Length: 425
Image (cartoon, rainbow, N blue to C red; front, side, top):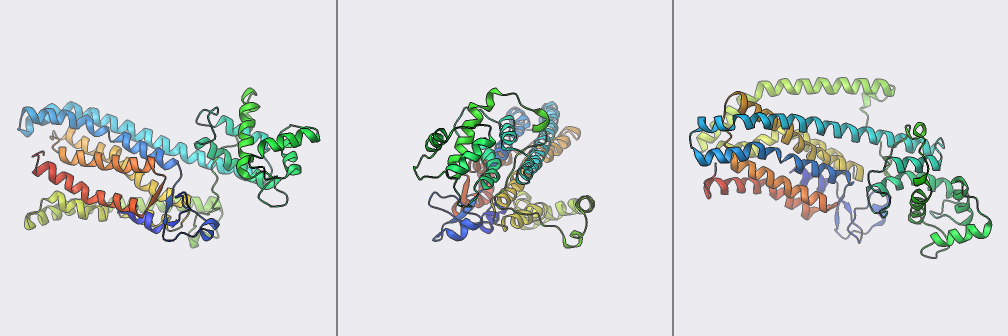
């Protein structure tokens, strides 16, 4: 449901290619009812991590299925699963640490890139140094075409430079502006040679170079000129990419607006720790009574407690994801919708590692049997469906949101079918 809500609250007009138009582009794009969201490629990477962490369930599920085929006594099943519960617990801890490490790495990279962009805008970083940085921090093979994540990072670095050389603010570079770019790159040519190189880059013969043509030229410059040059580590150390065209600023609580950035950070950190502490205490106090209440409702209504808890428990346990997804998506920018959906994928990764590890610790230390075959299959299958939709479709419209919403009752249907039709536990 949070995914469905995020897509609907963050929907903007789509262009003819089916890509969401944010900012000023949205006002210029007639959408005729065609709306949706387009997120950054980073979300696809998170979806792959989510799908990879579902493998952890197999560590306990495969031995559990074997034990169930050999005996129906829960105590005997628990003995056979005891070792594998420990293996699964260790794997969950390792996966959780690696996931946190990846999150920290991504967060630090974004901060570094923002610093680079600011350095470019303030003219403290030359274009050659910035391109050298783009080469050094690329995640893929720069010999490939300009159609990957590294290309997007490069364009984010180039955009401020493009604005500097576009003296007449036409959105294009003429010959004189292009010549100034060549000079900054250390490529000084006589007039005829400049015109020759200009015509080489002017693919559409318009008499000027658009941003895409300049980006392609600079990408080629990295491959042809910079790949053979050693990198100045001291210069590159101060740079790293992440540029958002929306120029969106993070909202600061009104009571903190007059404080310095350092004081704001300190107050926000203290407030976050305090709220998390209060929330943890509330969970410890109310979780056990809530489980008893859901079990009693199941007894009185004749409906298995699993189905009741599946519908009602997320209203409490996932309320934070619901609110954060809606709040971020409502800002209607590519950065905010990526953040909104990332919180949901991140919650799934946390469930697959941290929360699942807690379950396995109970199985191991209390000598319990893992008897959740139907639930495990449903969890893994639904996460793979959502993960594949996220990886192969960077734009989600309301139809895609509805399909993902149907995964919620679909999960219940899978569990019911496996338990009541196939007689799996």
